[in-house]
Image (cartoon, rainbow, N blue to C red):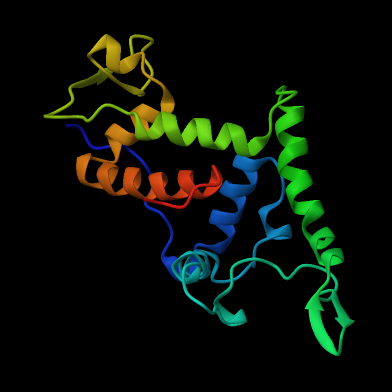
Length: 188
């Protein structure tokens, strides 16, 4: 298989700007508004790793702190989480929903679409054996699959084939867990 002619990624300790720029471009909104701006990738990894745990220290947390303080209420000489606290998250959730509506999807939620996309990725056929490539017919340096069915497949399925069968198996397992959480069902 011919080597791809891509520049190497920057060293991890110099990757913050490039990663935030790429993520901002993909999302269409400045990622630095809601993510930390230093040690981004290590902090994202640490944050994800800590999600199933009981604690995460602020030093490794990848998200910018929400504005305002945790809303609490006193009742019966006890301290309670106040329902008003939920409003602190309205802006972040509304951004994703607004972006999805602006994308042209009225009547559906971003969460529903995310579950659909996860289902699509999980359903990607396994890539058993070598996958033959060729240069694009338009003369560009772009590579494509020789098999017309593979070349006509979705971007998501092509990505699953490109990462390789071992990675695809692991990614599909993680996506299955995420899907169950997003769909309101605990993982099996």
